[in-house]
Image (cartoon, rainbow, N blue to C red; front, side, top):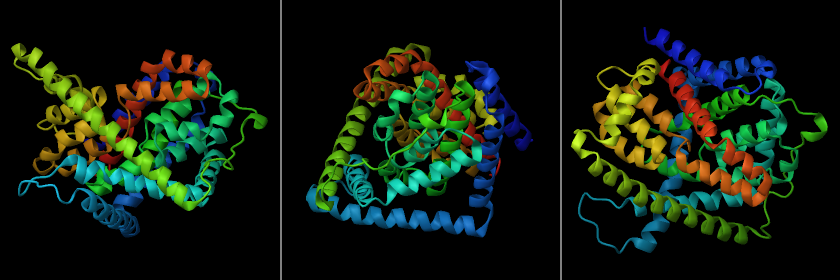
Length: 394
């Protein structure tokens, strides 16, 4: 029964994207079918084979070792602060680690290790699926870098981007996460689900964006250049700039958490007369899709409330809310919700993407603002699709 519901959920998600499409005649059905197959194969390989499990465990162990190194740096700076026994400070224990991961990414970019790898995999995806190279490159790039950084990396191609192409690259940015933040996620959610969400979200975002905004691109307008991906002149400058960028991200996330959690409490106080919280109301709204995704009926309201919280606030707020529930829920529900949460698909991301595009090309920013809500709906459908695929194997 679970398999049938999961397949139905996939059909519903793809069907909704089709209804939203602005050019149904030019949808690349072959490419979409290939990406859906790749999603299924990737999930099966990572969850159902010894090699896949070994890869997940190896990557998780690598991240854990990096977290240990990062913790040493954090402890040196804030280790003298007193924390009650058994307590923790989220900003120190989780967010400050972003600085170290951002530094590593900056160095790998300066050493020209990451850019060729991203360009190669993007080119491979383009060749297999028939999607344009720029869009494919951006999708892979979005796995490693945040929304702003991923879009800035293709700024030289912005003059070629039509409204549909701009929608696809924006959807990939919103539907992904940054590798610099993955370390923080791994401390709040089961590692295997966070790691499998990275490739699945990449394919989901490309699939649904390609249905909603199909494109056909002339070869002369489809080139990827990774020569000027960094302005750093030395490895030490790369380390310094990476650390500063990571510090800004940590502070931004902290500020947003304060604002969103406080606002959530305010809204719950205002609607307290109803006897329900905003999270509970969202749980009822997402109840039907939660059932289709494979969440059991006795857990779907709580799971739906977490997923809804992520959409209206951000993934960190939802993850903090979900953490205490993990031990009480089934493995399937934990997997589905964890994958759903591992993306930037929320209302605040519309502003981030629009602001980034405005800094690159002010005329293109008008287009992004125009399809902002459609962008969020598409990215949310992508999260649902990835989570549903994972649920089929749990």
